[in-house]
Image 1 (cartoon, one colour):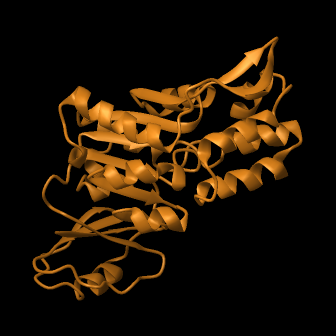
Image 2 (cartoon, one colour):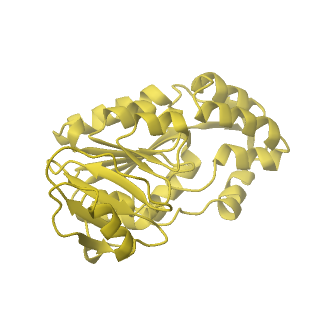
Length: 281
């Protein structure tokens, strides 16, 4: 087993020593980068005391390096919820954001909620989609490095979102995701109709995508690392060999193998034992 320490602000040698002292049969720590260290240990997994500002996660040694990355987009690969940003342009942000929050915590059915939210965008000029992307969408730290490095390792990388293809296509091109899947906004006469094309890509569809990609590649779910932040990601997080809750809602954290609250997305590489010397960006 490995204890992996990650933090965007850096992991000091003092912190590493403090963590190693809590392990039975700990080997010499291995520094993967300024922001990540792993420590191989033997014996039972101990209760590790929290260390402020550092993510501490235990991962198995067997099958540590993954062959497929599936990532959520909104609030995971990018820092915003695109539907909330579109709602801002439409003057209905408060209404839409309330629904989005309840969806992410698992209080509302995704399909019904996306219909309700998109309906509030009816009549919005389609040109606003590009404006929204240009003005509101950026990549979270480490996103491009994560995807490019896994591509270079020979892994498949897929962006699977409950958001919209207008945005996933552009984010995938920026980061290097080989595949992107999302929902399609219906547009007529250069304006949003307030409808989403069927079928809706939600929680179940993310799991279906995982299973389909595994079948295509001839791999198992144990070869997959998934990352997301909300209840819509729950099924793919539970199914994957390594399910990562990234700056996530509590319901997803409870189901995940790994919880990242203080790290950037390069932590997903550290979890697999990949050192900064092997990063591609």
